[in-house]
Image (cartoon, rainbow over all chains, first blue to last red):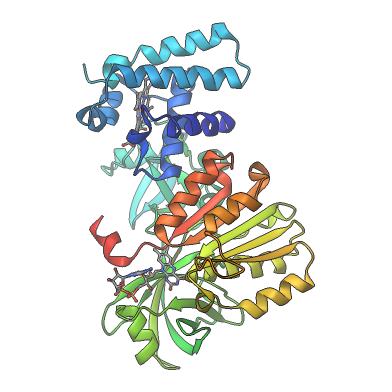
Length: 108
Length: 323
Ligand SMILES: Cc1cc2nc3c(=O)[nH]c(=O)nc-3n(C[C@H](O)[C@H](O)[C@H](O)COP(=O)(O)OP(=O)(O)OC[C@H]3O[C@@H](n4cnc5c(N)ncnc54)[C@H](O)[C@@H]3O)c2cc1C
Ligand code: HEM
């Protein structure tokens, strides 16, 4: 999981479409959140509710978070898993799980 | 039933109950989000017994060693005294042993603590001038012989700078609190490649970590990069040069902004040119705030492991208070 966090976080910070959302945040704190994200979408034990997802991302929605950013995150997620040798069918499942909270993340 | 003490308040945890849930039952809600030991929102610190290892999974080693744990996944096995993260600090009065010049702009301050202040060289402490209340952070360059060693860059208009350079003399009393920070040597890294990089008095923690590593019989290679504007900004040069001559595997690389000088070169540019095996290296970065943040991010993006980059940017006091 730690390897996945490093790879994913590196992709996120290096992606001009979304990296600005992650500036100004302490890197260690942010890595812990990335881990929370990965654990959640891989079906691990992270007891977030839809409401939690709304609160965590409300600040970002105010500064313009939209569907294109969620698409980018899901794309980087898939690329990360592929790099780690995860099977395509599992990647699709993880992507679907991430997609299922889209409306909460975007406060809709 | 397990007895907990949280910030002085006694709280009972039922058998199998987590610390987070026991505190909530007692009307003390902590910030929390995932409730599964991942997001680290509910981080607290044990002030006495070590917490169960399961409650520390995934924490940086410095925090685990200092007793930090996640309240949401901590089922205590015995009594614990707990504080909010970062509040569990020592505070004590120390007397000045010596104030010495290391260079025209850097002073070495030795504070007698009689070995009482528990810390690792490389961490930083809060220095308080009791009469004026001026409070600043300084890194620990050493803690041998019952004294703490600090290196202060004397800023002409700096409040603490002026107090230390002009007013402080042996036997004066100062207050210290802390320590904080994850910039310190871990004996488990004995064979690891270590890179120490800093600017100005960022050398203080790096010097402390270096001495600590040598004291622990470090076996891996160590490189120390010291950035400064020009030659006058370097200090401890002789000590570092003779160490380089004596100890195979230790390299001292001054990096001066003065391009005319043979040692000219931007610290970050030099480090990224000479260091190639980023994944297998532990980094310690200290000094100028912007440069250190830039280097940390740059090293991570170039392949270094985030948990192997320990950085202390020297944020000036006003900026920190405002943010
Ligand atoms: C974690 C940490 C560790 C630190 N460790 C050390 C250390 O080991 N040694 C050390 O010397 N300092 C260290 N510092 C910086 C230190 O805490 C003070 O900020 C510094 O000594 C200036 O304090 P002062 O009271 O003399 O100046 P202040 O009265 O705070 O500042 C005077 C003026 O100088 C400006 N100024 C402040 N810092 C700088 C700078 N770096 N360059 C140019 N202008 C500046 C201020 O904006 C202000 O205008 C550390 C800071 C942090 C956060
Ligand atoms: C695709 C669905 C997404 C899921 C499942 C998800 C999940 C999470 C989780 C679990 C957290 C941690 C919350 C906490 O513990 O506080 C979090 C925080 C965060 N997420 Fe997402 N996220 C998603 C999309 C996005 C997108 C598209 C962005 C921006 C491009 C984003 C940016 C952030 C940021 C910046 C934080 C930290 C917020 C803070 O600490 O202030 N997330 N996310």
